[in-house]
Image (cartoon, rainbow, N blue to C red; front, side, top):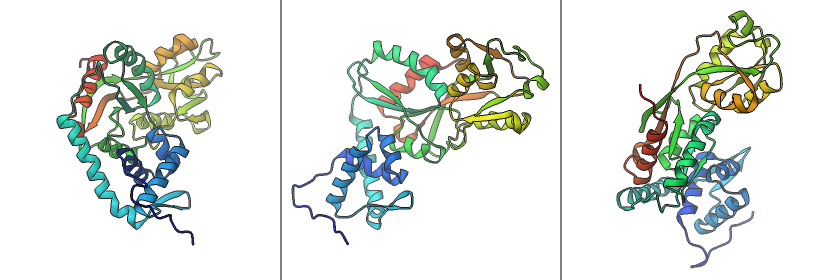
Length: 312
């Protein structure tokens, strides 16, 4: 059996980045997913894991089927590592100043693609003037891990409608989202106000929110209950894909109105009022209690309220 190399004093030292890698691997159980979360290449993450293994003299994570499972040593280290990361976040929140004019910080958000299209252009224009050194990124996530990522600081804010986010999570409403359908201009059968029979009789591209925890799932389920299964001809994970499919075929896609209006000009789409009682979604920003007093997070939340909050 192969043995791990023994480290000598001074061979390797721990740093904050390595502890963050360890913590994400505990959550994700996958090198590929952890690399995506941390915005690293997989070889770079593997190199960091190798240094952690060398430092602790233990494999830490071993492959079991398709998952990277923690060893007993890794499980023993889990709480101390998380406590160190939390103490560092507390220090930053209590003592570190934040000046958006000079900061080079990267903020991470979780939001669906319709949110990216609504938020990022306006946000980037604002940052170019008020905080030119700040970088923002949208990262993929799922309902199972979103609360943990908010708690750990891997995600600064979640933007959307996430009713399952409760324990330790704060929220402030931003706007109310409604839905509209889109087809290509010149669709041979569907106009802007079809009857229910006309609407459900057409072929549909359905956007699936399964696993994200987003309340769009309620819209998805309602469409499924009204449109015959044979008329749902494809399912896609993002709204922009559904709109593009509608552009180049005769299918109907039902998407958030903000996205539909933005894309209708560029893609020459027809906006169609769906003859279904689709619920409105309250879009909010979500953050964890542990980040509530952190100056950068406070500033970011204020920016989102200023740019995207609508009255009522």
